[in-house]
Image (cartoon, rainbow, N blue to C red; front, side, top):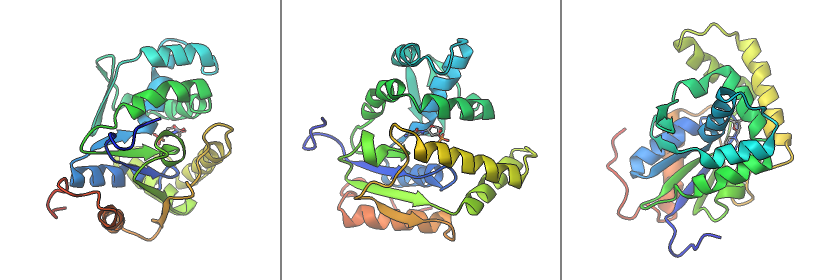
Length: 234
Ligand code: DC
């Protein structure tokens, strides 16, 4: 258990893929000058390392042992494993599929728990994921649950991929987001769900700026910014 009186504050931001979590978490972290944890990237790293070693994605014990041996360094916008920059490599579709598979294994989740909790450092941590508020940081000072309609999330992902030059169709994306939601929400361990004490924000019709402003309003209301907030730019 974490000792609340000594631990740095945590803002947990959970939600399904395409809800805007990553963007919002990064902006809020920047505004507050707090550390950022992209927990989904950690599951991607495990899948990347396992596939690179030719390991089976359902050998829970071996995967957990390997996970514990990895040296993972995460900075805003970059992630390294054992000194190798994997920022781009972990975004490939085969890694998305592999990450969803390893995320179903309690042994892997347990091995990553310490890595995640170790990132809780002063002045504070913005933790982005699926189970930040329900499992890893149950005592977070503020919990936000972001959501958006499947149509809007598929549209956002489509725009992102088009900008990167990928020709994937909106219809295929809609189906793959629905399948991923199904897997994330219905898995036996740490399924995606809103913590009872989380604040829900439906971002379907909101701009990024509006969502950031809404989150910061709650941050301020809880007195979490004292001495740490950066100016009102951006
Ligand atoms: O957010 P993302 O697409 O990068 O997440 C990759 C996978 O990891 C996805 O299948 C959900 C899973 N995940 C999880 O189980 N728990 C988290 N805290 C974050 C992500």
